[in-house]
View 1 (tube, rainbow, N blue to C red):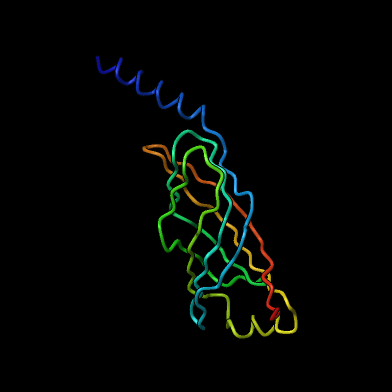
View 2 (cartoon, one colour):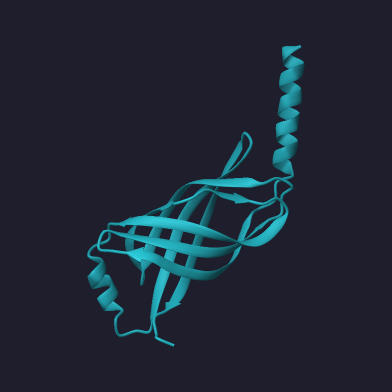
Length: 150
């Protein structure tokens, strides 16, 4: 009986893995700096994410390196939980915060002071969980932020 149960469980888990489709970050619609001080930065990133799967996915355990003008500024963590709706392509607000590690923020910002744009980059992985199944997803995004007073 235990062998039959184990085989049935393995079959169910294998079939759900085989029907998995890749989640895709398709666009960054906006980036907002919520707070900025010499030691930390908080961001809201509105990201269009497509989850073609028939189950929701909880995003967790981010390992994200943040960059300003290609210079490392720190590791980011999620400020709030994020759950991707099943079979949906929509814009999700992603709240991140980072303790600044990449040198004085003022010097980094001054290096771009004569430019009207600032390049914000994020690179790393996040885990997606649905029930007992978990998978890590790599990603890399860059967004130009307009600093001009229009």
